[in-house]
Structure formats: structure tokens, C-alpha cells
Length: 330
Figure 1 (cartoon, helix red, strand yellow):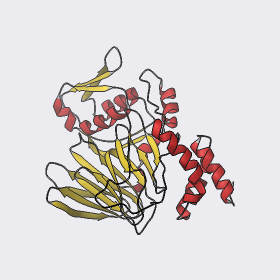
Figure 2 (cartoon, helix red, strand yellow; figure 1 turned 30 degrees about the vertical axis):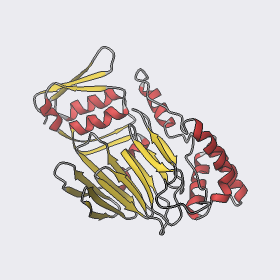
Figure 3 (cartoon, one colour; figure 1 turned 60 degrees about the vertical axis):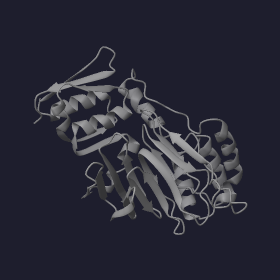
Figure 4 (cartoon, helix red, strand yellow; figure 1 turned 60 degrees about the horizontal axis):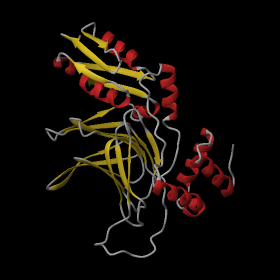
């Protein structure tokens, strides 16, 4: 299918807003947005309609994982998680110059619960995939000539619309990530001991932020994965396959030399179960594993196998708690 006119693009945009667009239509829409700098007038009427609804009710229908579903149903729901159920859009031009001391644009906050993911379109046409148990805050509009600044708690993958005049900055606790137009992943959950920034395309500047200011840590290129230790204030940079950085958006968990503790923390955000560890030494066991559309029992089985029989597990009667025990992991 090929769209040659603005009217065709507008029709696809309407379908997209109403969850009726086909994958090839979505690809066409985003290709058009990325190619054209000014799309405000083209989409303004539909944007205004969506924004009026956004004021009164959530922009995205929440779809969570039912703990009693089979793996088939889990996969079905997981696929639904990324249906675009709404937009957070506003491209209104500034009508008059505001004084510096006055409040800036209205801030919008989107949050996700356990087992939930959202796909959002920001006011500048940048796309954000928000992972489970995360929070994203951004202004109703990005003002012309000023930085595009947002806040993240948790994990998100960004596809940033290029704008050389307005840097895109993500504030995530101790780290600040700055780009002009690129795609990258940030993992910055509050209960983590480390934060990470991973680059899929383009260049990404990462800085450490503290009370005395900020310090540039590194300029990351595609395939680079920066891990920042919150306690030691030190960081490491590794090279990984760039396509792995947003694998979670398609329900693939990829762990490289990761501790059991971090693996379980990640799984807990996506599955309706809690974990109990009888021997805390097991939390330091490291694994290389990939889980694709697996139910939690299959994952627990795989961890047990990879431990060489050193780790065992059992579910409680309600299948809501998994207890791990053992002496060593091989």
C-alpha cells in the first residue's frame, strides 16, 4: 500500500487513533512523520479531539496479565499490550511569549502497572515504549527553540524525532541522557542498584547528575551499553548486539551474565508472582538466558536446569509465590 496524498495520511492517522490501523499503515504513518518536519496542521483537528478526551480520561487502555491464564492466553495478551490505544499529543504553537518566572506547559504523567506496557507518541512525534511499573513525565507541548526535557522512572525505549535546534533530554535519577535524534533504551528503576543506557542507533550523551552539577560520562555509539553503579558512582561500557536493547518491547527477556536477583526483579515486574529466596547466596548466581513469550513456570524450569541442579523451586497453592532454594549454583 502506498499513500501519495496528505488526505490518505490523515485517514491512516484516524485509523491509528482508533486502533484500526494495519501494521503496514502504521509503518507508513511513522515514515511520513519522520520525513516531514511540520505535521501540525495536517493532524491538528484529530489531535485536538484526542487532547479533549485526554483531559478527562486515561489515554491508553490498560491491559494486564491474568495470573490464571495459560501460556496461550498470556501470549495473546502480551501482543495486545502494544496496541496503540491512544495518543498523548499537542502541537499547539505558543500564542504569546510567557515570562520566564511563570509556569511552563502543563505536565503529563503516564504510569504502567505490573505486566503492562504502553506505546506513546510525544508532542514532537517521538515514540516511547514504556515498560512495566514505570513512569514518564513530559510537557503538553515542547516549546520552539527550547530543549525537549522529560523525566523517567523505570524503563523505556525511545525513538526520538530529530531536531538539531532542540536537544532531547531524559532525566532519570542520577543520570541525564541527551540526544538530537536517535533510538536508545534507559533502565532506571528506583529499586535497582545500577542504571543503564543502551544505544541502538545514533549518538547518545550520558551525564552523571549530583548536587554540585553534572559530569559527562560518555558519548555512546550504536551497540554500546553503559551500566552505572549508584553506590560507587562508577560505570562500565560494553558492546552488545544493538537489536537486543529493545527486545522487551516484543516480550523477549535477554540476560547476559546477569545475577538471579536482577533476573527475578525484572520478571516480577512483568508477571503476577512474587519470589521468595531461602538462601540469599543464590541471588548472586549468574545466568545467560533468553526467554521469549514464556510463562513463568517455563522460565523457572529453565533457571533450575541452567543452575546445574543447584537451584530448586516450588509454587504456593495459589500460584502467586515462587520459592527458590538450594546450596550452590554451577
